[in-house]
Image (tube, rainbow, N blue to C red; front, side, top):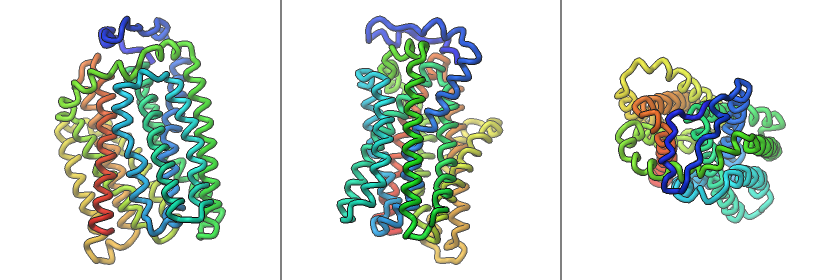
Length: 405
């Protein structure tokens, strides 16, 4: 991928002499471009594994901590450090080497992903076990956010945003693969007696996946061209522009991304997964359907570009109707709303609209930006994404504690 031809050296003026992009990037071979694509596809895939381990792992946790409703608590604890970690990275991330942030945090993710399932089962006292699991999930969430931000900033710096496509594709694949993997693991036995061995196998495979991706991260950062690129302080490069443009982007399509993710996480996984109590198979199947529909929405977004950009805002607000349908499951006593098919249908609509609106909002916001601003716009939109997810998990707590689902 070629460096941004509109690269602005003055962005680093407050940090001393700027480091220009390496000359080799201007004449990259097709082979190297292909290698970069696969590197970032695998990094995107691996970066999403920890969250999907927890999400798909609800198949086990929902039974093990039945009275504590982990489908509501786990997402909140996992994403709680997201905003603070992302802002800290933007303001002070340049003090830490890229290798330490990427490889070090991948190593943390592999270690704590494995001990998460061990602590949940090996500690007899439920309260102590649940507390330790929440601490581990919080650490996982922090390391996850550092890895996500580092990969995104690296992709933006090298390819001016073009390398974000394989990163996002990798994340979408993760949900599908992890859901299918859990279904295979359940073949060991899906009653409560055999559920832990199935979950254990699932987490072991997930852990080794992260270890493999850590090796890919090492190979990526050892490439001579990448070595030249990461001499730049990635986060500090975006510091002033991120906060200066925040209000402008929020008035544009930043609010659409924020609202879309807030509405998604307000009912997913908590409300919708909480309703699936008929069999252990339903949770991984539901997550597979959500991931498929989300990916389909992102793919078909290309065909919706005939609509004006205002329609993106209209659609993000119309998603309130989806949340209304979800609420019907709990507040309207009717046989139709109590069936799992209704819940699955809501999951599909929620996933499709989530992928469609986010992709359209991202495209329109970038189309409205000058070439030299695109990098900063992407970083700011990533920040809004984190805010939307945290807001959504907080709304889910309101649903859990006050509406008593």
